[in-house]
Picture 1 (tube, rainbow, N blue to C red):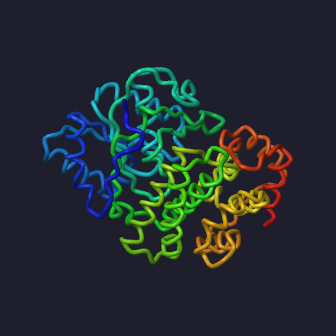
Picture 2: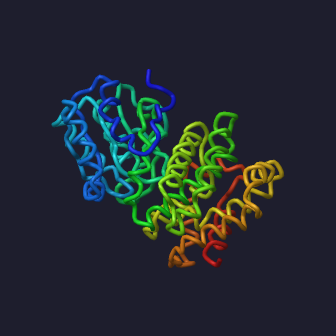
Length: 367
């Protein structure tokens, strides 16, 4: 049986321990899934050099794309099928890790990713997977879900299975230094949303709440430096660890309406995921805080911030200097209808119907 959480290896320079990690899994022929930007940054060369020095065979697949689609996963699977690896490494942002996880579903289970929408639908074994994030945001390294977009509609599907969870996640903050500031900002805001939404979703529990709380404290201690570009390596490490713990919180609970509302914005207007979530998050938090029990959780989480949570969120998001998105108000009915079909929305502590999502979008567009 696979573990219920990855073994986390955290700290500057810990990428050098990748050969020992691979050896602990008894593997020799590795497919490393990444994208051209990570290759250009030199991270792939560092990983392959230490693996090959240890006598391990490694082949690079650099065809990952942002918001990977079913076709992207099939392309990676076809490449892997020829190689017949005995392990996968996802090196990069959430898209690279999701591409690796998605191809792992198909290699020994067949079909298309839409066949695995939901949880626990892969009946055959999967290859050991090592996750190495180069961004601090998605928390994909600690989740058994691959988030894949449908071809054509770009509707996001969550395809999960305990066998898809990484056996090992290497959290090396040195790998996050190469991020462009915009990417660092967007992924940081995404991590912040993960900690907040998992803390109050209807499936929260003592385990997920511990992860959410620890993640929120780490993320809030680092995010302003990330957003203003002044973060040092120690600060980047706190953000990276916080993002991973927020991923573990999601794995043990779920998300909420900010993600449900963000996904249609990404699909309809090609808005970056972190930007879309940041646009919706303060409005969702304000709505949820109308519930006394949820307001108490927010108050406990934010007691160290020195400002009410929604105000702090708005001030923090403003530091990112994100461009004002052009969203046609006439598209709101379409967006709201799509949001009602998003799986994360059903876990929001305050139930939202079509009218409620419509109001959320109206507030976001006018603010």
